[in-house]
Length: 80
Image (cartoon, rainbow, N blue to C red; front, side, top):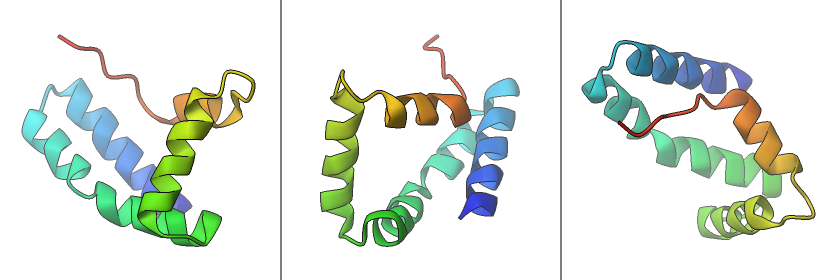
């Protein structure tokens, strides 16, 4: 899982640096595999239940851990 996350992060960073929308969308298109894998291995549940939990956890002002962890590894995308 860590190797896949590293590969995706590098591809996203490269696509953003090169302003390559097509490459960015190719990486983004693989998101369901990543979400499904994370749901099964991290929470032992279905993707829909997992994404609901992630959204609630990210919005919880009293528990910034998940939000901070995601910000630490996902490149910032600035709207142009």
